Image 1 (tube, one colour):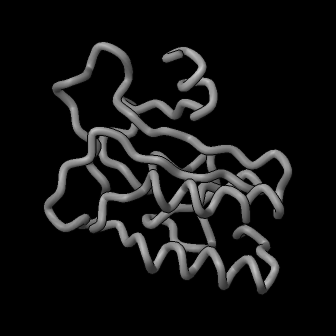
Image 2: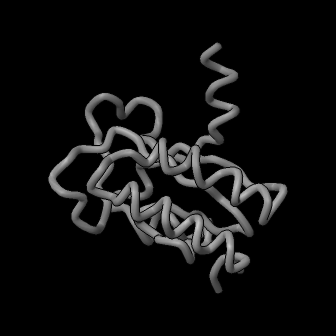
Length: 124
C-alpha cells in the first residue's frame, strides 16, 4: 500500500523530493515543503524527527540503509500522511510508518520518532 496522492499532489511532492535528494541532507527543507501537500491529503499529517534515543547522543549518528553520499546524519525529518512516512528515502509513495525505521535505518531499535511540534514545544 502507498499514499494515495491526488495526481497534482503526487507531482508536487515528486518535484520537492527531486529538489532535495537524500544526498543533499536537507530533509528539514523537504519536509517543510511537503507538509502542506500532506495536510491537504490527510488532515492528520504530521512531521516527525528521527533521532537517536536519549542517552545515545552525541555518540550515535543515523545509519540509513542506502548511500546518502557520505554525509553524516545526526537527525532526519519525514512527513507522515495516511499512516505512511514520505521523504527522500521512501520517495513519493512512502513507507508505512510502522515499518519505516526498520525499512530505512540500521540500528532502528536505537532510534525514536518525535513529533516535530512536540519537540519544539519542549524546547521553547
